[in-house]
Image (cartoon, rainbow, N blue to C red; front, top):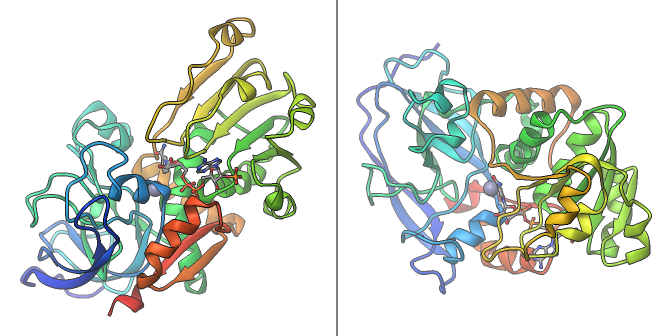
Length: 358
Ligand code: NAP
Ligand code: ZN
């Protein structure tokens, strides 16, 4: 075990972020606090690029604070720990997802569901005592995080870049699949085969379900089978959709834009549930209530996952050899990567190589 570190100074590091919603991301210099007694200081190796980063940095969601440094799919190595940290030591491979703090004593935190704590501090864009007054994310060289929110990575180091997207895309799909008890004997739909959706297909398949991938992109048909889908439906094709009427136990909708929900609700069996994780900037058209009433169907939402569940997901993925399918980019390619994500041109997650920031 390395000696505990308590006397490091705040450090100035390189990052990528935006000064306004209508401006591209540019290189920035930011400061990270010195590790406190319960903090873990992490040298970031890779950071995944989530569609939420685009929504937030472009002010598509309310309340973006600038400068905005996105990034909440962080993996790297511990470089220092505070005096009271017992679970981590310098050199450990770790991850940080969407949460860097919470109240630590409410019913949600006590249940390990820090993601639903009213005082949850997001990895970026949340108030913090650290400069500049709000959190700054993983498009950067280093981060300092309370030990409670640091995850252990058990995958081989060679897979580290492809593990990064598990910290958001992985847990956001794993959590509802587990909560709604998806497993063998069930037919499960995943709508939108992007960063989240491709993880949803892999995870539902690994949990033993029969998986139907719904995509607007016919070009993804072959690749969706390779991800673990048993059937692939091009959702713009009415005949292909109709073939699945009243047959699905569960649907996970990851689409990043408003769209008709009814077309998918109709595919649920009696008592089936459709869970929305996609968070478009403007609302979906209202679903037809009769479609829900007539077969006791449910529409629900789900937000990322708690810290214990995130560790469980990482361990499940390590055990089953699951990682994301990624395209590694340099930090200066981020604006081009955003444009390609908006055009649906990514298979299936961009990951920033943090070495390119130095
Ligand atoms: P992504 O990689 O861009 O994938 C979104 C997919 O949605 C696309 O690949 C596309 O799949 C489908 N799509 C269909 N029509 C679209 C349109 N008009 N615009 C954009 N996408 C369209 O995004 P992601 O990173 O997976 O994130 C998806 C959504 O989940 C975002 O809204 C994000 O903010 C949200 N999110 C929510 C949580 C949560 O906790 N609930 C966590 C993370 C992210 P096809 O080509 O297969 O149709
Ligand atoms: Zn995310």
